[in-house]
Amino acid sequence: MNDLTFLTEHHSVPAAQLHEPAPGNEQLDAILQSAMSAPDHGQLHPFRFLIIRGEARLRLSQVFEQAARRRTPDDEVGIRKQADKPLRSPLIVTVIARIIDSPKIPEIEQLLSAGCAAQHIQLACRALGYGSIWLTGGNAYDLSVHEALGLDLDERIVGFLYIGTPEPGAGTKQRLSASAITSEWHQPLRHDYSI
Ligand SMILES: Cc1cc2nc3c(=O)[nH]c(=O)nc-3n(C[C@H](O)[C@H](O)[C@H](O)COP(=O)(O)O)c2cc1C
Image (cartoon, rainbow, N blue to C red; front, side, top):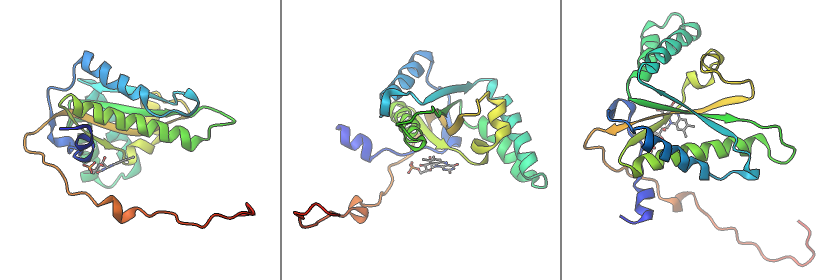
């Protein structure tokens, strides 16, 4: 496989199809290090990672359950679904954007940088034989979840990356052709430089 098919064949793996073993400490360090080469305007490093595994997933399950109970108190099925989420995969890496007050680099660029870091993590996981999926949902934007996870006020959850060993048989996906969303800008050159 050359580098390009590694990208064109990339796909997520549903969280419930991700099992033990998850990356160990050494591999996880390498995976997270790969995110440090994500594009980063001004070298602000506007992101950090929070690792959730083992028993901490049970605590996160309680946090998701309580948050869902507040959001949708009458939806017992939905509340159970939220509580089950952290228990599906052995490892969750929460990617947190830390928005830095900068006169030059707007918030959107910092969020994009954090998003690129998340994608680096997904690709690094796959390079080492693991699967992953990037999920958000209501929990990512719920302030009670932020508080439980220790986020500061200037921080946002970019995503929960669920990681583990994929079940055998997860195949490639049919993708939309890039040509369907690509055009070329053809404009005659103007000599008066006006727009
Ligand atoms: C910021 C972000 C948030 C996402 N949140 C969810 C989510 O909450 N639930 C979900 O089913 N997919 C979510 N996705 C999409 C999945 O990560 C994944 O891309 C999708 O299942 C398609 O699979 P594929 O990556 O193999 O094409 C999110 C993607 C991004 C970029």
